[in-house]
Length: 75
Image 1 (cartoon, rainbow, N blue to C red):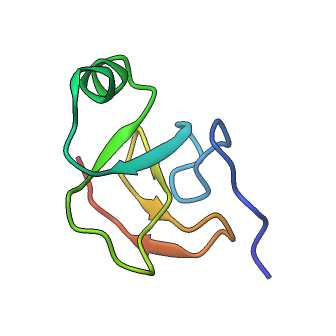
Image 2: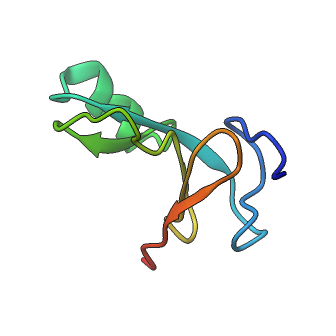
């Protein structure tokens, strides 16, 4: 079983950068500010029952909180 991940954890894929929450929905001024500050990543407007919850600021890998790797998106 993979370790439970949380914001601020070190990315298990690249082991260098931190994980931040993926936030879904149309970004208003506060979400844009948080995105520009690197506090969140934008996940898009379409929401499903199985969306990734965290993204690495370095390699852009996306994870569920249970540690499951959902996608890799090299920057």
